[in-house]
Image (cartoon, rainbow, N blue to C red; front, side, top):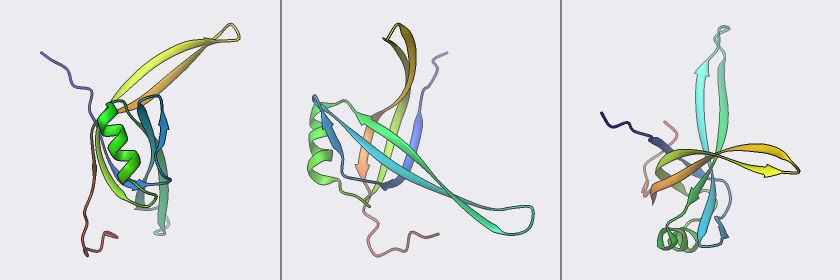
Length: 111
């Protein structure tokens, strides 16, 4: 049986993509809302940094993605580590396999 490492993300870009080497990093905000035990509506925003490693896709994102744009990404989660000052630092990266700017048209996306 093959396993799947798939993380689907839909949100809004927090700032213009940043280029590094031949890749790009993009901060994406996702919102969630719920009603707490007191019946009050609560909201929270989670921030995810997505890395685009494909050079052409990264160049496209840098040229076409701006703060506030709605985006969709299919990603994989990659764990790694490196040594810093003799200590091991562990990392978790979100690597985009698919990255699209969404065209929401005039539809109200607040729902």
